[in-house]
Length: 83
Image 1 (cartoon, rainbow, N blue to C red):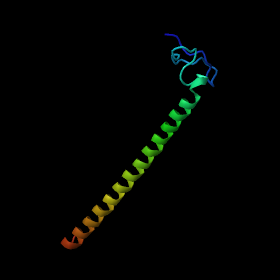
Image 2: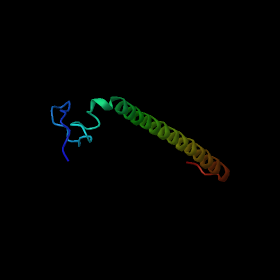
Image 3: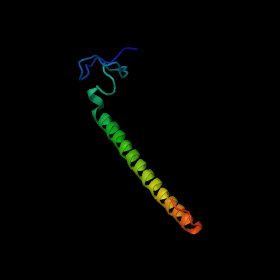
Image 4: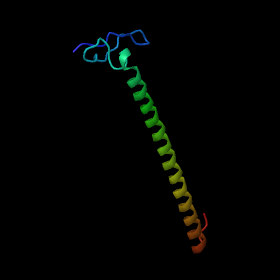
């Protein structure tokens, strides 16, 4: 299988395999511009969703930690332990 004939931004030859019936890969084939934009957009959304999910998980861990600290403080007070 032959490689894409495009040149990358860095000036190197693209190392991706060409699309059947073309001399270019998916990312360099002019006829695939709309599909390429959609794929890039979906990739960006996935990244945003991942970041939002990690933020929600981090906030939940902080809430749990705060509740544990409150429970420990209550136990210390109840049993007369000091820090």
